[in-house]
Image 1 (cartoon, chains in turn purple, cyan):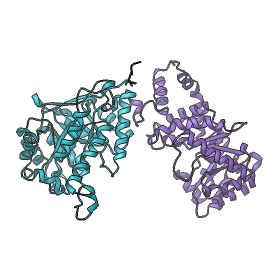
Image 2 (tube, rainbow over the protein chains, first blue to last red):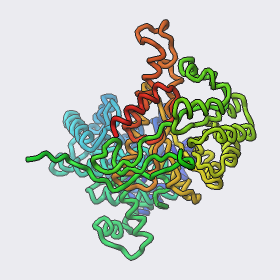
Image 3 (cartoon, rainbow over the protein chains, first blue to last red):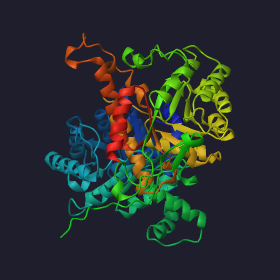
Image 4 (tube, rainbow over the protein chains, first blue to last red):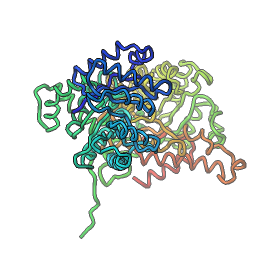
Length: 285
Length: 313
């Protein structure tokens, strides 16, 4: 499992301020911390970056790779910023990953960049019109993206299909559709297609104390479905791996000794699988 | 070979709620099947329709729904008696709309007096509703709950912003309570959890997932109600088993389709018939979605929906 350390996002206040001031300190500190916790790649999310995106992405890539010998996930909707980042990316530590193309024609040029710079590309299984309803619609869009990738000369081994994780607090049914989509995507090619998720979106909008619990359980369940990579907090995922055996035991219908943990795991699995209706206080019921 | 109807079985059951006192007390809920499927289980009570009245004259209602009450609506006590005695109402919903700060801004004491006066004039169950101003509803409903002590009324509506005070008032004075959230099934469940965590008995709750009129988001209310009912019955979700309220009249009689005169839109036909049909259709749809308690305005719409209920159960 490849963990793409997610903590370098413009949404976080500390990171945003460092990006504005071009202050390397906090950026490098977070990158090192994610690397040490087990990240195999670092996500550099600079948002839409309409102004100065090219400079910012180059600065992010070089700043991170100055201290961490890992490839970078170039996370922005600005294609020019992605290209700028690809030009300075140090490929000796692995291929960069572009986040992302989709089935929206506006996002096709991203595939050109993937072919030109020999990069991996995330294919987000959404089209121009709205969100996919279920796993099957995600798979249908994935097939379109795969066709498009071949047309642009990006090998299928370089594509990571992303089923788009939605918030469990508002789109509960999608939690299990995404698990199913991860399994389906792998069947679509031989060797199996690679897959990736933006994991923490599952718990976006949930109470703070609940977020790591949902993230970790969801991670284990996606891992069991064959997930290749997750954009996630490497520290949290290290904890998840520690708890994997307990979660797997409960998933297999076994009883575990820690009764409190047993309840927490059972309730969380039920909420993810849609067997009970989500509410912020679901663990207290 | 004889035909055997395929039957679903459900693991959960909606709570049976009784309101009012004496021989005019009324019950709703209690079923263990989806709406109008008595062959799959039991439906001990028919859905209950309450006539809506308010503490101040209904000058804000469209003329066609003011008309049936024009000789009585100047005073809530006369209005309530008219609904009970002439229209044979099984329950009455008193909306204290005059307490709203942007309206007459009536005081909690005035509201309490209205509640007392109405209760002394009727023997059918009473639903006491605030003006839907979260801040003002808290003191108004506390005073109203005390004025109605031990008459086993329904108090409402408790929302995320004010549920603590209103639930405490309902608990202290032995009333049932409406918990309202805004068209979000997860927040609806969350509010029911929060209220029961205060020690309020979940079997005394009524869930209001927020109503909407036909053409104005009815499908959202329908979908949320349907999913609440499915969670209650198929997942045995105890927090989703209180009966559902459809507060129909208020939402229907404010849209242009129930107000525009025929002279303005000849293709829409007679305005009075149109308004009645709109209210009855909205109510009928929400009965199908799972509503057990309806609050309605026009006597002819109430009559039509009552007939539908009689024919289906």
